[in-house]
Length: 120
Image 1 (cartoon, rainbow, N blue to C red):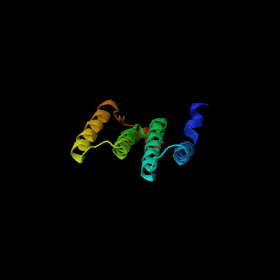
Image 2 (cartoon, rainbow, N blue to C red):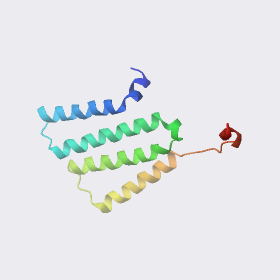
Image 3 (cartoon, one colour):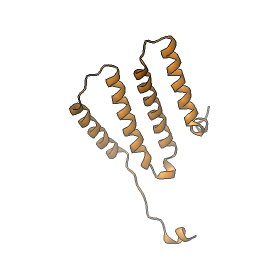
Image 4 (spheres, rainbow, N blue to C red):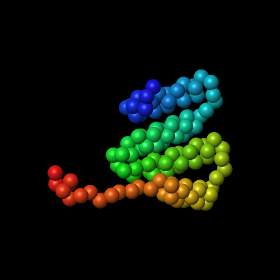
């Protein structure tokens, strides 16, 4: 399996993972519908990160920050759904920290384009 195989159809890979989670929950694990839904949200958020990294050359990395923050929010929801007793006063600074860390380590850079290149 090559990298192009995974970037070609991320929605299909995410759907396969989501249906796998539903299959396991239906036959093997006593998960509620809410737990399965949150797990699927995390799977889709992880797929969003993969797509953001795979397409960073198209948008100069701008979508990576949003994808990571979405994944972090889905992961916090997953933890709360499975019993983590966190208050909004605790999760808000956690998301702030994650947002600042992402902004520090993943910088969107852009360079000006030559006017002659734009006209051509």
